[in-house]
Amino acid sequence: MQRIQFVPSVHILVQTLVVAIILLLLFLRTEGSPESALIFGAISYMFTYALYLIDTLEQPFRKGRMSLDDVSLFLLREFEDKVRAASGIEAR
Image (cartoon, rainbow, N blue to C red; front, side, top):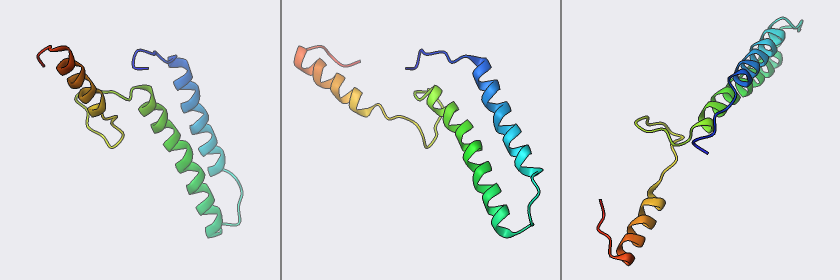
């Protein structure tokens, strides 16, 4: 998965769609009620977070970058240690 290269034009398309939808929501005529503001905020948050999610899923195993979404490789390292121990190869 780490070697998959996503098409840059798809990122541009998604970003453009998100900006267009948020701008469209800004220019919609509403009564100015708190419910309208809440709906606008929720929809804007979902689309903005979708951009972040796409970026995170594109490269889940980033080295040297700590975030809450990092994928832990401890199980893979434990498995490697067990295989090395079983085959008699010293760990690095």
